[in-house]
Amino acid sequence: MVEYLPRSAWNARPPKAGPGNLTVSRVEGAVIHWPGTGSTSVIHSQAAVASALRGWQDYHMDSRGWSDIAYQVAVDQAGRAWTLRGLRTQSGANGDNDVNERYGAILLVLVTGEQPSAALKATTRAVIADFRKLYPRGTAIRPHSAVRPEPTDCPGDPARAAIARGEFTPGHSEDDDMTPAQMQELKNFIEARSQAYALWVHKQLRRDLSGVIRAYALDIKNYERQTDAADAARAAAAVWATAPKSLQVDGTPNQDPETPDPNTDPAPADPDLDPFPPVDTTPAQ
Ligand SMILES: [Zn+2]
Image: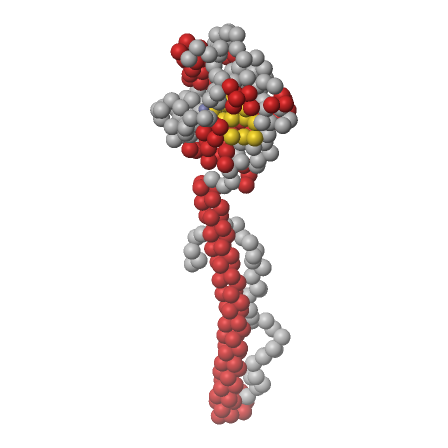
């Protein structure tokens, strides 16, 4: 639903007697224009757009001798829609009477080299949807350069490319179109996730390998301890054998195999690592 700013919003002069309304059955579509200022000075604020529209109306009425500003509706970069002649009234913008009868005329407030904003495109799609309600057969969306009898680059290369991509067609979703910034953001995200996954694999392998190493080290330590204990027992037995009989008691050390040894039993396993941990690009220690 488009909110159209009224003619009073740009301090419009009343129109002179003009061509009247379009004939519904003749209308084939909407033509897209730009003002063709020949300048790169942008026209963005509401006050700047209002002033520019009033200036173009003066030019069209006073210098060209037309009944009113030539276009039906204007759309600016902030996504504002402005009532000019209105969608029912025939435009004077398309080039001659034939194309003016067959097409409406929508003005995009763009200057040389300016890319149409997402807001401008969204509002223009909504305006064209309104246009199609009035003119069910008028589904074409064409740049002025495609219908004007004389050559023109109107509405400029960026808008012409956007028309060709269907970006002014009602129902077109901008969601499918990624800007370069969005593309870079996605790339960074995927890279960070890949690094996080590689880090997880690394940690998992390190955990598994260190478990194997711990178990092996424990075996060696136990073996060495048992060997040491056996050597010590043999040495002790040899000493005891030379001791006076009155001192000889059972000196065998307690070797209960069930008693855990905190120095040699394996530490509890690490809790399972999250296969998709929070993204963290800090290198592993
Ligand atoms: Zn034009």
